[in-house]
Image (tube, rainbow, N blue to C red; front, side, top):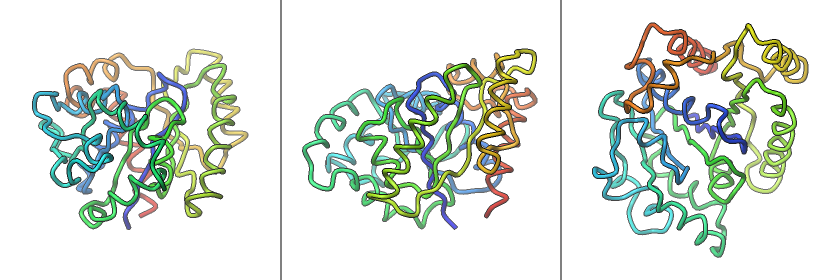
Length: 253
């Protein structure tokens, strides 16, 4: 059964794009058909997947603004092999233009319909804000995957995000659910990391994945080389942790 996962947190720097890239790579390695949709104008998921701007004729911006069909925009990650719907900085145009459109929150969902039979997983890397692009992702999704950095303000930001998800569920996507919450940049030597981790376990015992993504230099380096951690350093703690997270996700298939 197809899972469409919106990877979202309105706070930047929590490992959202890192999770999008590495989860896509792990699921593809596990023989799943994967499409990664880059919905962030910063286009870090696109570059981190090894796709250079010079190779992009059409992007997600062209799809959202009806300038190109979705199947004409999809590329393949040259190193990791999964499909990617790339973004460029021009995606800021959609942020502005979609606000004036009727049924603007359903545009991405309608575009994805024709491609759903081609994939087992569609992962969407959202921008670090609750803007129209993020709303489109949440309306399209079957589930929300929330990366949470183990730091002081994590729970406050998570509460705001959960309120937004509940509003989307009521207004536009009744079947939307929390797929899971994943702890990122976890450092077991840090008391604050452990305290936040314990609070997450207390407040979200059902939603919290067992896997913790460690603070890991190899994870941080991999995107600048245009590849996932599997390809950059497959035996690192970061690689093994994302493989573990992918295993938790597919066990519900």
